[in-house]
Image 1 (cartoon, rainbow, N blue to C red):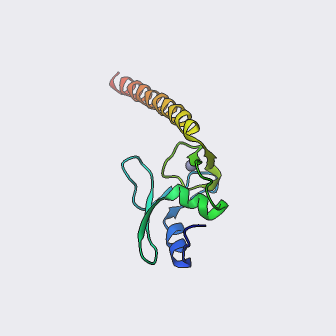
Image 2 (cartoon, protein in one colour):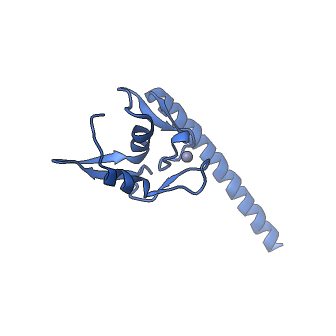
Image 3 (cartoon, helix red, strand yellow):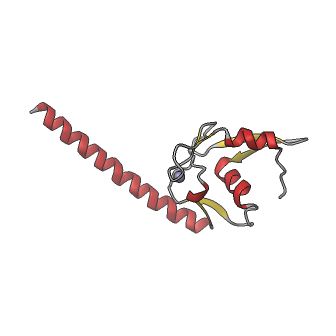
Length: 125
Ligand SMILES: [Zn+2]
C-alpha cells in the first residue's frame, strides 16, 4: 500500500461513516464536494492528501485499487461508504452507471412530482 494510515486516522475515518443498517448506504458525515463525493484530508508525515472516502473504504477493506480501475457505486450514492455497494470498474462502466443512475433519479423525481401533484389535487377538491 503506497499510503500507510495510523490507527488514529482509521478510527477518525470510520467514526465519520454513519452506519444505520448493514445493508443500507453508509453515509459519509464529513465534508462532501460539489459532485457529492465524501472527502477526507489525511496528514501524512510530510504532506496532506485528500481522499475520496469511498476509495478509502475500499482500500481499507479490500486493499490496493488496481491501476486504471475505479471504485464505483452500485447504489449511485456518491457519498456512500458501504463496501458492499462498491465495486471495481473502468471508465466506461462508470459512464454507464452514471447514465443509469441519472435515469433512475429522473424517474423517481417525476414519480415524486406526479404524486405531489395528485396530493395537491386531492387537497384542493
Ligand atoms: Zn450505498
